[in-house]
Image 1 (tube, helix red, strand yellow):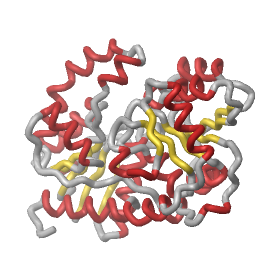
Image 2 (cartoon, helix red, strand yellow; image 1 turned 180 degrees about the vertical axis):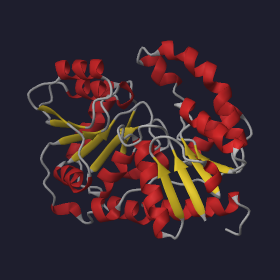
Image 3 (tube, helix red, strand yellow; image 1 turned 90 degrees about the vertical axis):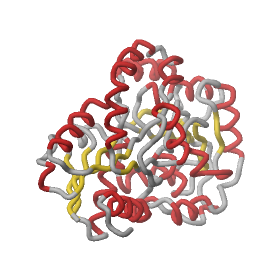
Length: 331
């Protein structure tokens, strides 16, 4: 089986969740014997492949262009939608001017979605969100996101350092909602480390202005350096406007962090009672959740649960079965 995976141009320069998902899935598929090529810039000739795997319905333009090329080549494709309703986020962060673009491009999303041989959402909540927007869907298989357990798995962290150190890993952008975390923890004296690339410099400047001496901003790090940051933290917080479910939260949980995360998106499907949840628009609730997590013991069994259920190997196995279904082969 020869498969081409494609998310968007510049996949290597903007390492958002879709980039990590596409890269990790391709690598894990190769270990399962799938000839999986990942296109990080322009789309190669789809005619050279049995199947194409497209990612991400929200920034639709490049996905739609790739879909047209796949359709012209007469090749089947599967779709990882990476989709959630952005209405609340756009409205409450002052980005309502983007609604015109969102509405104008909805027919493109609908066309791509309905032409897919199979869709591979990251959670059942994502399926339900797609149904609310688009009605009846093509066949689907839920493929949860994952972590690399060779990097991010640390069982039995009861002996970990328990200092009041909060970590927030993610792109500096209004959707990740770092400013709300700063406003929530103002006056507590809790040290907070933000780690990630700056996607919105105006927003970054506002966050720097809101920070206090115990707050640091660090560029993105990867691999074992990132795992070390998770292991040094008591709590990881991701108060985003939505996550499906947030790769940083999964990685932090696998490293033994207590996890505070948004209550928007598919996060409860993944963490259940193993995390604390907060609404992104309520600083008092964010503050209460973080302080409760700092006072709580390390989450018993959370890292082991992530290791058992949410690895890229498991995601690749589910993805490969999806490919076989899309190609009409026994799964």
